[in-house]
Image (tube, rainbow, N blue to C red; front, top):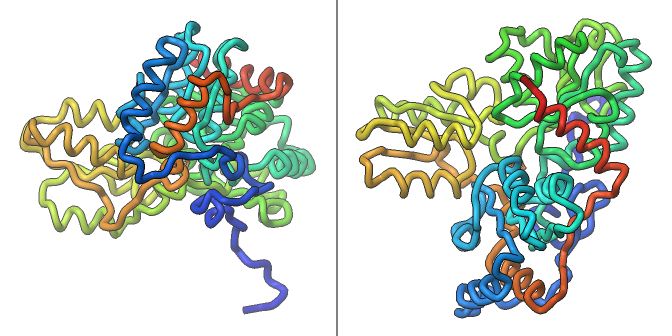
Amino acid sequence: MNAAQPLDVQPTPLALLLLGREADPRSERGVECPGDLPAPSDPDLVARARAAKEALGERVFVLGHHYQRDEVIQFADVTGDSFKLAKDAAARPQAEYIVFCGVHFMAESADILTSDDQQVVLPDLAAGCSMADMATAEQVAECWDVLGEAGVADVTVPVSYMNSSADIKAFTGRHGGTICTSSNARRALDWAFENGEKVLFLPDQHLGRNTAVRDMGLSLEDCVVYNPHRPNGGLSTEELRAAKMILWRGHCSVHGRFSLDSVNDVRARMPGVNVLVHPECKHEVVAAADFVGSTEYIIKTLDAAPAGSKWAIGTELNLVRRLADRYAAEGKEIAFLDKTVCFCSTMNRIDLPHLVWALESLAAGTVVNRIRVDPETEKFAKLALERMLALP
Ligand code: SF4
């Protein structure tokens, strides 16, 4: 290798995310959990969680993300994707405490959308999102300067995926952009192109590319990837000026694992299978799939599927397992798209000991692991979220 050539590698906090044991200044999520946790082997954990939740009554509302473990999801008052859960929490003003069994950026969004009287708790501060960590506020500010120097910032509209830190949502609000989810990314991009000539899509390159190319008919050549670890994002001024979609170089470490081989393998193993994947998967996976959509779309599609149909699902394994169990009785055969295990390891930081600790602490009058977004960040992040809510 040429010694002068920059290495095409991203420093990743993955090892720390997996261990959840260290402070990581590059991470949007927190540090080691401070609590005196019950032992995972304690046979009374389920009874303790139930007792603490009952003692809190209406004062607590437990949110369970679709990718959460079964041992935790059994205590959720409501399940869903991150945006649905944040809205559900806002619709429960009597709940003083919102216990978010999800990851850090989701708890931030819940804090932004709920009233000041509601306190959002993340049972383990080390539950972050590797995708959200791939775009820091400093990196995105530098990118905006690069776009300014190329003379394109004025015609670029930022569109940020819900799976981003509050800082990135605030950047988006400040610069006239909107948030999107995997359900409304197409509408968000339509809106953005009505308001500008280019889109800076953060932080998931795959959702941005898949929406632009698969749903809107743009070409792969219309898209460039901005790499925050390279000078000027690794792009020339000409490339920035020619591009319609400037995709941030981020991805989901769970959905990014599915490959074209996974699709070909499952078609060989299960003749007649329908391949249904999340749009956070790579473009070649999405292009080879039969159906593509958000977790809510995946659930609705399986719900409406006829008995005897076969499905291979490309999303997080906890959800796929629950769906396979739920629909087995209706004669629907549901398999996981990949042969290897594919959990969201950071989401799985929230386990029963952490949930018991959080609920018992709240029942004893101590608020632990509160997630708070500062008022200035909240103001602009909310602006970006409101633009999304106003999308046609
Ligand atoms: S599944 Fe992917 S995007 Fe979702 S929280 Fe886990 S790492 Fe983040």
